[in-house]
Amino acid sequence: MADPERRWCFADQLGPHFLDGKDQPVLLIESRAVLRRRRFHRQKAHLVLSALRHRAAELGERARFVQAETYGEALARVRDPLTVCGPTSHAAAEFVQKLDRVTVLPSRGFVTGRDHFEEWAAGRGGKPLLMESFYRSARRATGLLMDGDEPAGGQWNLDKENREPPPAAAELPLPTPYVPDEDDIDAEVRADLDAAERRGEISFVGRDGPRQFPATRAEARRALKHFIEERLPTFGPYEDAMLAGDSSMSHSRLSAALNLGLLDPMECVRAAEKAWREGRVPLRSAEGYVRQVIGWRDYVWHTYWHFGRGYARRNALRARRRLPDWFDRLDADDVRARCLSTVLGDVRDQGWTHHIPRLMVLGNYGLQRGWNPAELSDWFHRCFVDGYEWVMAANVIGMSQYADGGSITTKPYAAGGAYIDRMSDFCHDCVYRPSARTGDDACPYTAGYWWFLARNEKRLAGNWRLAPQLRNLHRITDLDEVVARERTRQRP
Image (cartoon, rainbow, N blue to C red; front, side, top):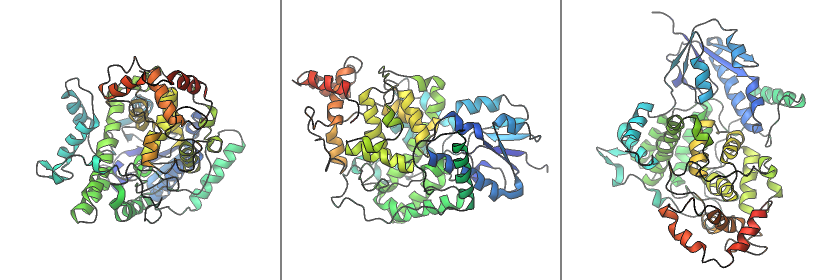
């Protein structure tokens, strides 16, 4: 039998499920040009390079590890015929399709295939491609949390049970999240990034710091085990809650490892299902996590390809304001609103926060201010350790900024300070009052919410879920004052 062809693995295809056998030779490429194209978070650049170099070290003689200016320059040094699993961006997919000696295989690293999604989408009959419907089809296809043909527990979605505010104690009784130990490879990566930055070749946002997320398969498996045993039991109830002193809450912090390809998503959801069937976690926690992985993560991946390149340029609300410098620089200390300052500080310090601060603090503020959705999507891509173009298309363009006009959601995710007050402890000790929309203590989110509706009243007139709020809009006697103030607000 002939030896398998060398498998070219991108830096987000680092797990064993991207190979066809334990002896398959591998090509890994570290391109310097990638870090110059965008101003990435320092810790994201470190994590990706560390993971790539750790994989090369693990594979030893099986791997050809090429450090070059570009992928094209690296490939010119390799004479072997290559296979590659479908890449995770439109640009990379178009690049590999044009290469001689490279056979492109179907993508891996997701639970469902594109054929499954397209068949489901075709069956929608022109209706919005809502994640909940896709999630149910994925549950049926995989058998996850199913009892025969019915969902375990009799309900598909336990989200209504998973909206508890944070505990009054301002902390969850949990051990600290799993954090790996750095090693000599990390030291080498840090030295290389420092040197390149001193030479002016690259620049970063965010602060450097000890690596907080897995860079190897072994570390990722330990992180998964820690989550299932220590954090999953309380994940469900507090899935949407936020605390100023705990950016992780009960969340898994596994998204970066999944998006680097260090974990197979199916092993994650099977572990959660097993813990529930053995009575170690409640169903609402297991279902909430399964929904995030095979529901939302798979759905986001498929919509990226289904809608195509033009989706990232959609701007249904005509939002054209540029991101302000203080936001782009992660300048948390110059922000007075405690929620935004805290969350922006978490991004600055670790390149990560869980999905509710992303959606309801960061994304919500950008939506209210009318920031350009493509710019904001790129910001999330650059500043989060788990951020990739495919991740941010539906998450930012579609869900957070409603820039697709409702192709995947039924309403914009805009909310005032009352929501943040209910679901967090951010409003305690804040200089603003969540109930105030005028005056010096007017909450930027509360006032911003009404400015958002006033600015987009005609565009949102047909949205039935916003009909009550739009009816109330002109009953607000101080609306003109709110609009004028928010239009000129420089920073919260």
